[in-house]
Image (cartoon, rainbow, N blue to C red; front, side, top):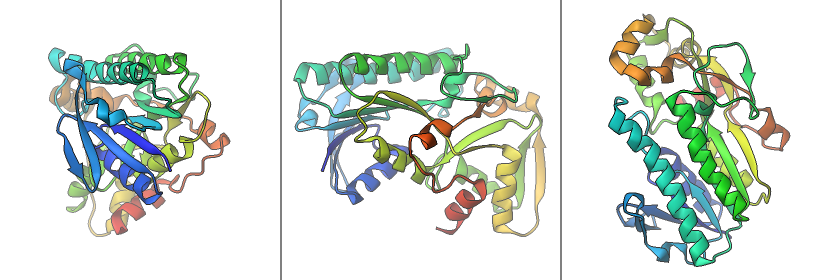
Length: 299
């Protein structure tokens, strides 16, 4: 049994992952700005902004999973919020490494998340693998700086895996409940340029973490299932509900007016290659959009 420290445990991925780890017999503790307990999990206080961490959280830790970072979708991308997005990721990852090194504990595996946004604004037909160039936009450069901190874990001799995560489909949060609300009224949302969306079912993402827990190599993987358009996502959602369907095509200029620079999340998605993780031995349970949507709607 492993004892696993998770940062960002209270988020969408963290709660689902923690539940799965507990079912598999592992012990889980969290680092959070608000200490306490959640379903039997001890939550220790930390504040990366102030470089504070309760060192009791590191007691007997064997594995570390870093999910910490301000949600990029939480607000409009003002200059100050972009700084918060970047600093929340860099400060958390660096503080955690500093404390691990100072404590002298032997971490058997570190897994940190990044995002497929590292490949940048990209509407080409190319399908990008882990060797593709890094983009030059804000989100891409944020991911690059984030991953450079993870490289320090590798340099410290800690076996490290980086998961470049796509859009996570989960009935409890993220994009899916929002689309589901419009789907209740038979409304399908489209974007005029047919932007690509690389997604992964939350269960598969959690299984990917478990799959890598005992791997001792340093690695980077794209954590996505397949590439679809928003139209295909909406069609699958509406097909699962049946009834009258009304398709709404949202023009690109309107999205840009409403969201500003953040509109790139909806309008400029790259196509992602997931063959590396599959060749490594990982098997997806929900690699087709139909199977994923069906499970989310019916369970």
